Image (cartoon, one colour):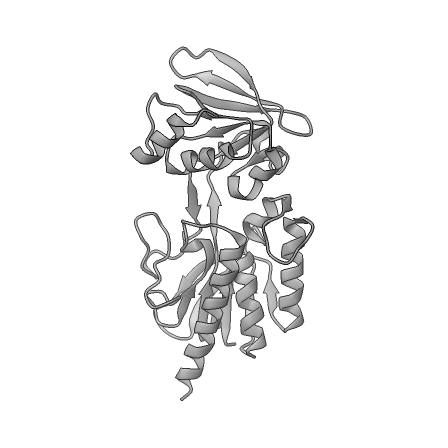
Length: 304
C-alpha cells in the first residue's frame, strides 16, 4: 500500500482523487463522520462550478464517487491510533492495522456546540456554525450569535451585511475578542448585545423560531424570537490521536513544516486540521490538492 488518507471531507476526497490518478493506491479512512462539516450543511451556494445550490451531502457524494472512479478505496471507520515513528507508517481502525509509505491527514475540525437537544435536531434548519456558509439564507431576517470571542464577532459582522438584526448573546458582561473587532461590532447599528445570558434551548418544530435564554445573575428565563442561531464558541481540531506523533500547536492544530509536510517526513496535512483561518470547502479542496501533489513527488523522490 502506498498512501493512507485520514478523513473524507473536501480535503481528504480531493487528495484521494489526485493520489489515485497518480497510481499510488490510496485508502481513505473515512472517519466517524464521513464527509466532514459539509454533511451538516444544507444548500451550498459558494462552491465553484454549480450554478444552482447543491446540498452539502450531495457534493460530498459526488467527490467520493469521483475518487472511487479513479481507484481510491474507502474504510468507513475512525482511526483510533497511529504510529509515525518509522516507515511503513501504521494506522489502526479499531483493531485493524493499515500500513502505508505516506499518510495525508485530513481529519478536519469540529465546531463546538452548546449540547442542547433541539440544537442538534435543528442543525441545517436554522442552527449553524458558519456565517460565511449559511448567512445568505437569512437575508432580511433576525438572527442570534452565541459567543463573545473573535469567532463570534467575526460571524456577527459577516451576518450584519445580510440580515436585519444580529443579537450577540454572551454569558459575561464584557467581550473576549480583539479590541478592533469589539469596536466594529459595537459601532454597527445592526448588532445588539444581550449580556450575562446563556442559551438554554432552541425553539422551533421544523425550523428555528427563537431561543430560550437565562440570565446568569438572576436565573430568570425568557424567550427571544429569531430565525437563525449561529453558534460561535470555537472549533476543535480532530487531532486527539496525533500528540506525541506530530508537532501540534497550542490550539491543537497540526503544524505544517515544508509546504504541506508535517514534522514527520512522509506525513502530510490538509484542510481544517491545520487551517483555523478560512475553514471553507474551496480552501480545503486546494489544500488537499497541495498535499496530494507533495505526497506524490515525495514518494517518487524516495524511489530514485
